[in-house]
Length: 468
Image (cartoon, rainbow, N blue to C red; front, side, top):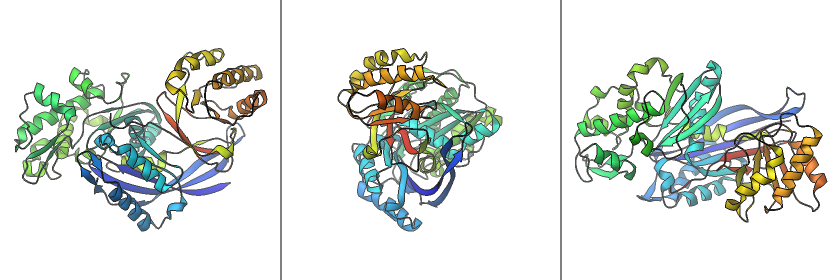
């Protein structure tokens, strides 16, 4: 079986909005266990839209009609019919994810584009997609090294750490190029509340309505650049940096290589001394100064720096090319209830997994998912015996007596078909069963499950965080 499908990525960021269309080749191959698997064999970008400023109705509202027009024009220019799009993601990133209508815009746009173009926001997924789109993941795999990618946009820095190609951590901070904005005369028209504490604590004289001295902007950007040194584990983590975290903090690590993507990443080759105020404010924000300050602060680590394959387009390329996962051919599913969207994931064990305690662990965590469909996530034994399959089956059936909707189980290891069959045989009452493997998740994630492609199922693991 070989299919070609179209995928779209839409990134509605703090500063800019862009659209990417890709063609993905889906193919059946013979896996290492001599079982046919469905894989994404090839990804080809067929259209890149111009990068335009994100349209806003006011400081707190995204202009949905203009965003939709941007997407419609991209489809027209690419000559891809909307009905031909099978997958993709609408990502609302940075400070734009905090706009009052962010959730509504992403949902309406994903519905406009098709049944399996997901609406998503949240720094974890953004960081992961930017790491893929920038090429950091591939480079980490090629070099067998730890690569950290810092995607610095208008409102946030989304960070992903890859070890030999596998993402080990993601996190995000309120550091970006449009945390302070100016009008055409150079007067400050916006200061993000997220950095007000820094201005106050450092006695930096930047105020709304006032033309600011370049030296004040450099002091602030130098501080933000030092914060990025700290999150690369090159300096001790300060209390100021801790206050800038959007997500949870990270586990310390030792990095081999560092790459910078995002809009600010385009300016990380300039020197601080070169920048004059008129040059610095070419985009009416602090992006160029921040980029130059990062170059200065990371000067002693030049040997660790690597150039990403993509900078400003990294996230949107990740959304178009890497948001889709294929769960293999040895799975169980009831086609009639697909597609499913925005199903919360309940991960039972973070470590010390005990299949005899599936029900006990799940029951403890179910209170936050009252009266809603849930997907239960488990690593599971690598090659389970029939006795182990029966134990997992009985525990899951008992757990799902407390959960509405279909039985949805996500496994990291490859035994979904066997487990699904055992569950179906042991159910007392008729109930739909979806059991997928090769899916790695975290608590707080959501899953979209699409229509089958041959004998495989496309899924997207995502986070949904707005107005935080």
